[in-house]
Length: 408
Image (cartoon, rainbow, N blue to C red; front, side, top):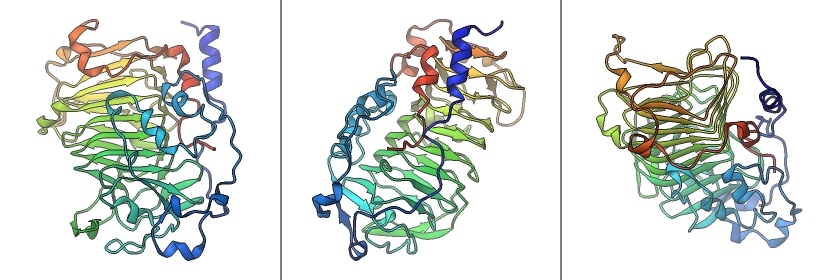
């Protein structure tokens, strides 16, 4: 069927330049002097004159994106950074990160010592056991020597700076809870380890090889990954495994990668039946091949995302996951089918017709199509895979136009 006028306008809007674009790190004025970089710096240590910025109403307010409309309409967001924690939606809506803690300022972009990290570094803040809201005093390119282990009750908030975590180790969220990662470019992550790494002020120990995912969420809950740029890593971009649950992955810009997002790590991990993950308001850009996402066992709400043409399949799964696709915009290229049922051992798929996969209110462009299975309609079959009310798919282009880190 030929596209109507509204669909043509959606496509045109979606191809406009976006403020997420990965930008080269530029020189910028620091708000903390070099003398302070040798010790941990908290926002209360910074003189009030350092906050001489122009408060303005942010663009992107009132788009219908409920996350952005929650905080981007506040012209004083810098003074109210921790109110971002009130804006999460979906299964990860209770993730508060470092909302109740102090604001820790990263003043040192080095990562020279993973056993005794220097105060002022990202690693030093991430490993603390107290709640912290971590921000950056200037534009930074941080090359992690080894994986970064993030403790509970942490927010890594890149707003107001151009922050790249690139060319080195990954971010590991393992057996913790209440973590928010917002507004960071994470790309070109490499395999690291084995290594001895400090994970908290009181413990360091041996770590095995890290695969090179951008973000690995392992045995954790109440996690929110929002407004990041993710691309070109050795393994996946976001992996959620080992019975992790209460996770929201939203407003991110994904591009140029093969295996994008793994939700459930292994066919024998039946404990992943507890997994609930929301994937919402993301822009899945050019050059993505598969796993957008790839699901096992649990319950997955894939809602109000924009899909550029994929190069193999978009939404895949095995081990009978429940997949609720609502209000997405799918634009096909050479590969038309959105869905793929996968057997890990390569054998023929038996019984997939009973798996609960449905498309509701999605828009399909250029021949894209979704193969439903299992229980028709809604009701109790999809209750555990529904995390909020979907917006109309016709609004997806505008709601995802600012996906990725924002220029603020």
